[in-house]
Image (cartoon, rainbow, N blue to C red; front, side, top):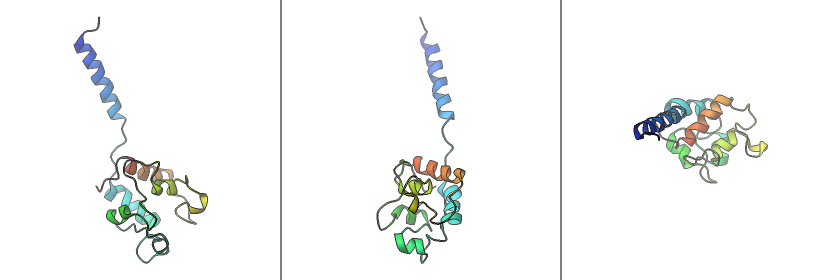
Length: 124
């Protein structure tokens, strides 16, 4: 017969172990915005060709969350369905992979943006 305190300690240990494996929080201002500025800003800032064509403006969190003239690009908490992650990870049609006509973002930058969206796309 297992005693209740032992059972509770075991359950607590398992929960703590699961929590420690969570991805560290990703900051929009500190982590994501610098990547967007460096890799995407040449086309997706006001007056640039990507912004003119799609309406996607990456100059701020609010501008990003407005999406494009075709709809939102970020679905907070859903990195698999968000157009932003689909386009930078190459899960959409290859002809529209972002950055368009450029070198793909390094895997660590793709993961950073993916994790930020999966974590709820916070304005942090």
